[in-house]
Image (cartoon, rainbow, N blue to C red; front, side):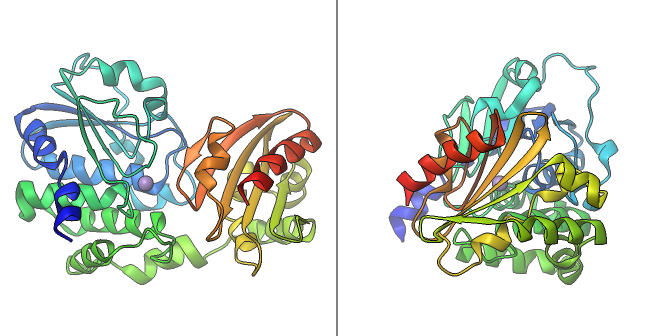
Length: 327
Ligand SMILES: [Mn+2]
């Protein structure tokens, strides 16, 4: 336990020093933002605002999939009144490309910081506070805020951090849910977080059009390699028939990985003609980040994503080859 504790604190002290000495701070979320990147950045912003710092949040991407339900989008500040921040911090970004179009602004900072929990991080910032075993970047953000001044945390900040924990750990069910994840979650509940509302919004509630999309997609799911690989596809006609958009397909792949015996589940969503967004979920054996990595994408061991172009049949063939090698 001692050795692991030493590793755990790597970068944290330096991260706190850089934050404390900066007056102007820009926080950068990753492209295709999820709750962890957005809620972590906003929780840090709202905390540092209380210390009188000027903190702007930048995000190259639209808020969707319920992210917009837990915070006010006007907090994501896209104004460019400051060219050079004292500190630029990338939140939940496993590599520099995840910062997206704001990367030039990021690297122009007097100093740069990366706060993250992804495995393939390339230490692209001057200071890197990275713990790949953390359940969510929000765990690191919580630890930072507590170290800076625990009294900064209020119910709104706690709700943001709790939401990030819930969504990045699959409602505390993925293997990345650690002892610390649950301890932090329990500490956050003391601030009046409505945990059952958050679980309902992200894990139970479904709109009727999305329910119909799900039924359609599940109806045409295909299975390969003795039913160890499941593939689900969403094409333009599926969205048109149900009154949904490609954003509505995001979590349906989880239905496939829950089938006993399925080791790899892939969802293939048409985002524009001949352009597909792929999401991979894996069971105990396969590594989703390796599969995504083969196509230039990234993620975690059990959940990863990437883009592919071409005809749907070829996309399925190409991804199946890599999946079979990973079984
Ligand atoms: Mn994350």
